[in-house]
Structures are given as structure tokens and as C-alpha cells.
Amino acid sequence: MKKSKALAKGKQRSSTGFQVVPSTEFSPGASKMSVSVQSKSIKAATKAGPNTLRLAHTGASTSKGTSAERKANEIWFRKCGHGERLFAEYYGSQPGVVPSDKWEAFEEILKTPLPVTFRLHSLTKGGGGPGGEAQASALAMLRKELEKDLSKMKSIVSPVPWAPLSEGIYQGTMDKQSLAKDENNTKLAAFLADGVACGLLNRQEVVSMLPVMALQVEAGMCCLDTCASPGSKTMQLLEAVAAGSTSNGLVIANDAHPKRVHQLMDTIHRHSRPAAERARFVVTCHRGELFPMPYRPFVKQHEASESQVG
Image 1 (cartoon, rainbow, N blue to C red):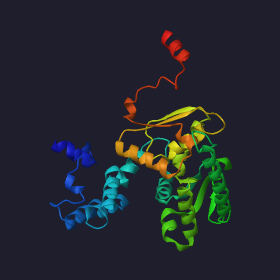
Image 2 (image 1 turned 180 degrees about the vertical axis):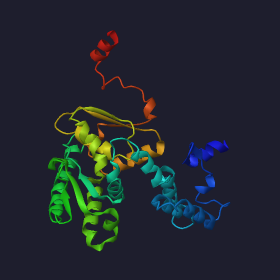
Image 3 (image 1 turned 120 degrees about the vertical axis):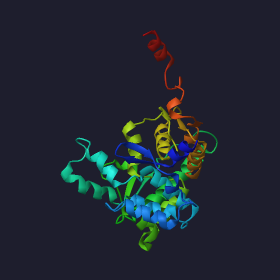
Image 4 (image 1 turned 135 degrees about the vertical axis):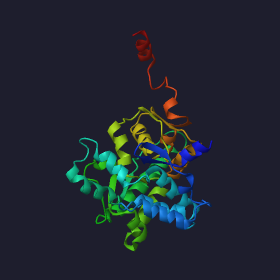
């Protein structure tokens, strides 16, 4: 039992492979190791070069910050805190990934803060129960007002050049920290907050938008999202499935952890998704790798019979 707990706390690569790291090195409230001793161990570990992830872990190793901040720092360190050296060692040795003469430039790009990005929700037609048409009409009016406000901020926000305008993907000239701290960006911050509250946009990283765009989901299709929380890609799927005049289509959103399922439901509620999308939305809680194969509507009966005969 002790060994499994230590394994859960994190691993560190040695010359012979992975080995268990003492849990006190990762515990934010470790009583057996003082803050000064932890700081010395972190400094000793970073003598070979700067390691921003280990330095970030100092916030989780002290009593400073809220409980949520300490927990976030610790989780971040457990996932990624094995150092820039291991990252460079692994990816630098992969043939054809990054040429050695371009590695430094590659690292600098990785350290560049991501810009603020968001996606305008597609306007789904009414349906899916009482009030569907009225809700769709109200969202259309709000969307027009939103687009007017957006046109006044062309100097700091613009559509991404590589995606069709119909996708509604926008990118700001600032990163997240600048958006929160710079007083000049208060108008954009208020715009984003209002857009989310009205169910008109979603703050989402561009890299998170690409999978659904690559799938090219059409109206009326049936989709299974086996790892759906927190819900950004699920909302993209719902918009695509519920588009047009068809009443068909279904999105099964699954996640293995009950808390993450709750987070998914909260996202759909917080973004005020219209009735037409909710009518096509099913939530499950199951391990993705063990998810039972759906028979209908994902596989037509005659297709299944033919495959069984063959």
C-alpha cells in the first residue's frame, strides 16, 4: 500500500529507468520536511539549468497561496515536473521531429504564452421542445449585438487566417495574463464574460478546436466523445450535429470520473445551450477503453448482419 501511494505521488527518471520519488518531496503540507530543506533540494536539482516547472513547484511546497493554487501547482508538477532536460532528451532523440540546429528556437516558441482565443457558437435552429424557436430567435438577436461589439475591437481581436469565417474562431493580440492585468483590455474581458454568459461564445484554445474540425461532422450524424469533460469539443460536436433542419443526430458525451461528468454538465448549463442541442445530448460515466460498443444508431442493422455473415 505504501508503495502504491508513493507511485501516485510521481516518478523521476534515473539512468536505469523510472524510480519512485519520496512522497514528501511532492507533498504541499509535508511536516517531516521543512520549507527551507525543500527549497534547497529544488535549488540543487536546478543547478544544471533553469527549470520553470520545478520553480513553479515551490509555490505548492510552501504555505503560500490558496489551497486550490497549491493543489494546481502540485498536479502540474506531478504531470510535467520532471524537467526540461528529460523533455529535450526524449524529443531531441526522435528522428525527424525537430532538427538539432533548430532546437533552441523550438524551445523558445514553447515558452511563448498562448494568445487569447475564442470561438463563436454556431446558431442552432429552434426545436427540441417548447420554447426552442423563441430561444433561437433571442440568441440570434444577441449574436448581432455581439458581432457589432466585436467589430469595434479590430485592433486587438481578429479572425484566425487559416479557418473559414463561418467557424467563428478569433484570436487576440494579448495573452491570458495581459487580458486579466492590463486595464486597456477590460473592454475585451467584459465582452468575453458577457458572451459566455449569453451562450454565444466559448473561450477555447485553438488546438482544442482542431479535432472536431478535422472530423468534418455533418448535421444529423451520431458521435461518441469518450473523454468529453470539460466540454468544449462536445459543444462543437453538438453544434455540428444539430445544424440544419434535420431532427436526427446524437452526441454521447462520456467521461470516466463522476466529478468530471458534473463539470461537463455544468459547462453545457453555463453556456446556455439551446433546446435543439440538448435534445441530442446524452451523458454517460464509463471508462472509455471499456465503453460498450453501441449497436444503434452508430451501426445500421443490415450492415451489422453483413459483417457477421462475412
